[in-house]
Image (cartoon, rainbow, N blue to C red; front, side, top):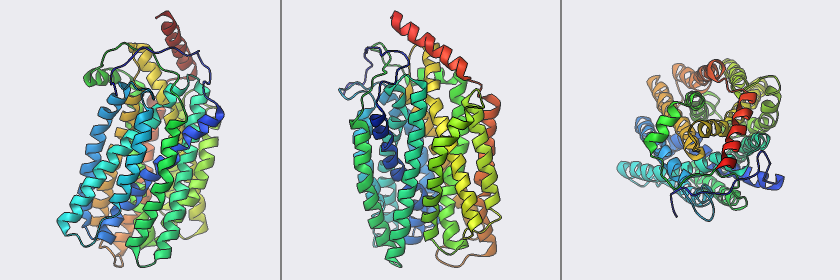
Amino acid sequence: MNTTGEKNALTKPDTPEISGKKIHSFAMGNLGIQIMMFVPVSYLMIYYTDVIGVSMTVVSLLLLGVRIFDAVNDPIIGTLADRTHSRWGRYRPWLMFGGILVSVFSFLLFACSTNFGSSGKILWMCVFYVLATVCATCVYMAHTAMPGVLTSSSSVRTRIASLRTFYLHIGYIVVGIVMSFMLNAFGKNVKSGYFWCVLLLCVISMPLIFLSGALVKETYVPAVEKIKVPVRTMLKTISHNKYVIIIMIGTFVYGISAYGRLTAVTYYFTYNIGNPGLAGMTVAVTGVAGLFGALIIPKQFLKYFSNRGKAAALSAFLNAACLCALFFLRGDTVIYWVIRALSMVFQSGYCCTVESALPDTADCNEYKTGFRMDGFVGALYSFMMKFGGAVATVLTGFIINAFGYVPNVEQTATSLRAINASAHLLPGAALIISGLAFLLFYDLSIEKRDAMRGEILKKREEE
């Protein structure tokens, strides 16, 4: 595989260049990707603390170290992908072959033996978590970057982003149903329940990810010279692109909210409510609500706002209000489930709106500098999300541990309040900060974006 750029044929301006069937086949890959990302985010900590028997402090520090390593690794992988030239294109090989590897390593991550000594358990978790997360980065980066090279049409890019978020929530539903049903079916044999759950989910994910890359082609490829752009130059260029910076700041804070909530909610339903199966079912039910958010919120909000920043901000604020309300409700009541579902509607709309803005920032970069970095921008997006997730995991573990958490016993009232706050109040506060970043600073209007894209296509035709 050659990692230099190569001059490619231009496509016609602002044409879909991809059929509806292929849009769905590509977007469906996000179902498999999110399954592989969602399982460790939601269940890895409680699996290793309560099932395998590693202390929460050690698990929290391991998760922090691995996620920081993986986050730092993101720009490197994004740069390599931007420079890749193969018969499959820039990003497709990373998506197809990374999907196979992430499925294998994710399965092994949840196959740790309780017969191992303490050092053996820690080593097993470290090795396979590093491998699984690096492969997940390859897959997620490629899938995030590819809409920018599949089509030049803004409307089609928005549709792809909506469908990616739609299938993301299908992934939530699949994980929720499988984990809830199988963990309850295995009863006290929790370790076997995790083993067979993760195996089944890996079998579902692998072909979906592979086919999402295999069934499409990269057609909107910019003309670039056969040069390698150093990472330092890319970072310097990005530092002058305020829209990328705003998205990265907002995404980092959103990562704290999303990962913190997913980590804490398993403990919440296990100890505050006394029914671990509800964690999976809540994910499934709210995932259904997320489907509506992906298809409705971006389209409706963009009717009333001239840029994606205000639409993302409104989604974040409404989601935050829902999460803060959940702190005062019990997780086994109807009103809790209704508001949680509403929260997922707004979360879905937020994610879809922000992801659909990534190709716009790549256009802005090409407009100013002459070279395009979809993969690098996608990798930075993944980097900030994971960095926020790393902070969230340690913060959640620290708060729960500091207020008296002890695995597999009845928790004190203080510990239960800390778990509740970690699952609801802290994520809500983070969303308010993320929304403010978009509301106050993201001013890329639709008119400005379209004018910029027209200049880009004009320059390409002159080359």
